Image (cartoon, helix red, strand yellow):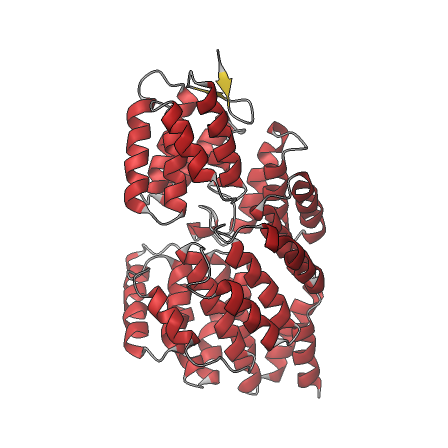
Length: 439
């Protein structure tokens, strides 16, 4: 009997339970829903020779920052895929092997070629997509456009009722500025499968970019209680609600959400999410003139200490630079700046000079030297997109530049930037700042 994955691609197993568990496990992984690990483990137990189940489990380990387990699983997949698997399965495992080995450039190139042959291979298509995908972290300034192009190139291969593809395609359009189209696609995909954390997350972004903060808060308040705290996006989706509260000026509400869902120790999020969510929210609080309760920065610094100790991952480096500046760790900040500068000079830092510039500007901002902060950030403002992540995450850097300009007396420059942002989307915070400048 022949078995297939959820989108009709053949899979090499002779076990009905293995095929069923595999389909369930991949669905849960693409939805960022608890239970994916257990389903994939059940698939492997039912058929220890099932290469794609080992490969999917390896991907899940990699997502959870468990590199040793990920390498062991992808090695097991590679051994098994060599014996009797299809060409598609061998290519699938090869792409994941490159990604898990940290060879992001070759992994992206191999993934794109693979998708030209097998566009319905959703697990491989998921690799270049998303805020933390291979395209986002490629250093390309056009990665938002590239994700849209990739989705549109392969849209013909997906059923209109494919919940995962609708959400992924919608998020790509939202981030590239086509917010109405992105929101409509995302809402359709999310309606098809509500037990989908990636759907709730993508819709939160669409509402943010649409200037619909209260809608985002209502969505999250109603949906989040049904998403188990063990879900990897639980804390991050709550972070979106805190961001919206902060934009309204409700620092107390933002801190309450932070305390209940986002801070280290209460979230089961991925380390990259935990660090970037906590650093960015506390940094915003400070930049907007709100007090950060004692101990919160130290808690984040303690949690972050084992992670991203080596420079070279631009998105993480920018946040680690902000953390060092905020906690007065000048030596740590300067060491990271020096390492990043060396990588730029060697031509090996994908995101380029904008990353050490952000870290230098953070030090100046923390020191109260607003003119220096603005002087550093202004020339690279258009390059901030290269660090990856989402527009909502990167907006923190532009907020820093705006606050520095306002404090440094550069009202004209600040007003021009605020006008451009308000033209793009309504923002009560930006409207308050604009009114202050007018006054």
